Amino acid sequence: MGPKTILIKHGYTITMNSQRDIIQDGAVYIENERIVAVGRTDELAGYGADEVIDASGMIIMPGLIDTHVHLAQALIRGCADDVALVDWLKKYVWVLQGNFTNEDGEVSAELCMAEMIRTGTTSFIECMIHSRYGFDGIAKVVERAGMRAALSKIVMNSTGYADNPDIMYPGMVETEEDCLRETDLMLSRWHGRADGRIQVWYGLRSLGAVTDDLFKRVVALSQERHTRMTMHLGEVVDDVRYVKDKGYKNLTEFAGDMGLLRPNMVFAHGIHFEDHEIDVIARSGAHIAHCPASNLKLASGFAKIPLMLERGVSVSLGCDGGPSNNTYDMIREMRLAALIHKPVANDPLAVPAETVLEMATLGGAAAMGLADKVGSLEPGKLADVILIDMRDVGLAPNTNPVSNLVYAGSGHNVDTVIVNGQILMRNRQLLTLDEEQLLSRAAKHSDALLKRAGIEITPKWTIH
Image (cartoon, rainbow, N blue to C red):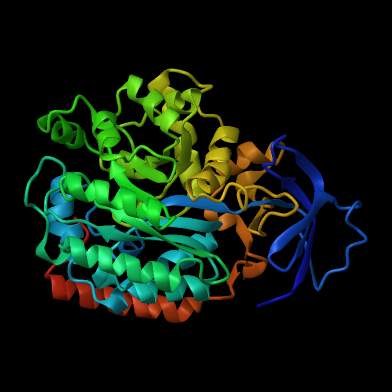
């Protein structure tokens, strides 16, 4: 399990506390799974530790939190680039995922988590685990990798996608009772396990794949089981047509009628809300996972993030998946989130670097229901800490580390990752996962999956 006490010193410490204090020569002292002290290096000099980490030239900050992840899509990275959305789903993504074995699901999850750890993500929300991905195997990878995760079991009972009826690939279909039975089993088996690092949630499929009765049933079950929910909403304009065809004025009127507008819900994307709906979301306490790279690549649109933030909506960030983003690098995602809203708003002040960093840490903690446990470096909080090496020609001169991190950094600058007081990566070396073996397994499983699904992925240009 590594050292019981860790002292990290001499780092530019971005605390993300309520005052947003930054300590130029800062230190963090960790005992077991919790942060005991945060302050100047000289103030913490008296703390003896089993391991001392010199963070000179580095940022010390809270771990990043990715609130919309498809673990199964790491293994199908790049499978459908530059393809229209419905074809993207029908011809590639669903076909591949619909041919997964449990072992494919485990390998993909491990590949995804290795990338997340390498790029500074310490916690994540996996939005939809199909039974064919193997929930148990995925949970075991989380346990072994050392990350903090909300694992959401798919819940569905129909085969549509928004206002496109009966288009889902047969291998992706599950029955309502099977979904709910497996969710109950996984809640009893994994919720609160791995020293409290694993949560089990309900992962409602998109509109068109869940009936009204099932939406209401899951809301009641989430309250009864004291857990949370997540779903895609307003990612495509087809969602709006779907609810209007059902007689509703807009997405939030539908969501409100289903009981989905509540603090234990994380909506992914939230692009196609009307301005006045944003007030409804803010009042409900529901959370929005903003996924800028995916929204850009699939031409889904621009979420009204500046207005959401202004109206008090809880906004976090998500990388989405391997086919829609191609990376699980939250630092790159922060850069996009800080850039794309400025021309849309015609305002260079929109969504500044500091706000994006809040979304990637505090916003993610709130979405996971862990605002009192992670998201900032403060005594008593869980020790989810990352070190980012700023000694890089692409980050120099380091006059404003927050700005440099968001606008110029990438996950490749992450040096050390600690979750629950356990070091998962040190000096860019993964300690809980075997990277070399993983790369070999991923290649073999990818080849076998493509053959099984009858899909060939090749460059558009001729290979000689």
